[in-house]
Length: 123
Image 1: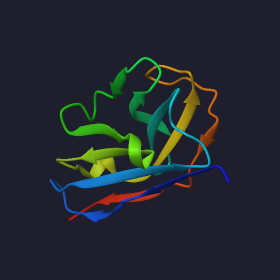
Image 2 (image 1 turned 90 degrees about the vertical axis):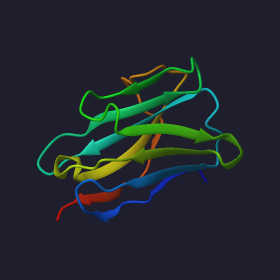
Image 3 (image 1 turned 180 degrees about the vertical axis):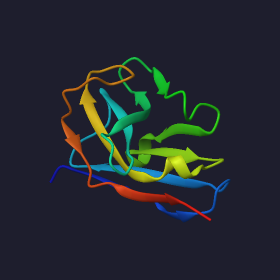
């Protein structure tokens, strides 16, 4: 069964950190670009970071540069998003989506995506 499962979200105070995980099963992440998307309350999803296995490119939205870091563990078929210096505007549901043979930033179409994990940054 093909799945992407996100985890690692939660409630954190401003300035805190979280590490999100996107675990793929039923397929390998080789030859895909993996994008992390934030859907803030009342807004459309926006890509905040991307990592491409195809051309090894990475992408960070301006709003997260210097605070977020994307990485991968090939053995675990997992991509991580380390989020430091969290701000209230980082609040939202974070999804990972994959696009076959794509570079970063991704533009679709997307082959698989997960259900998302909630991140809330609040004091």
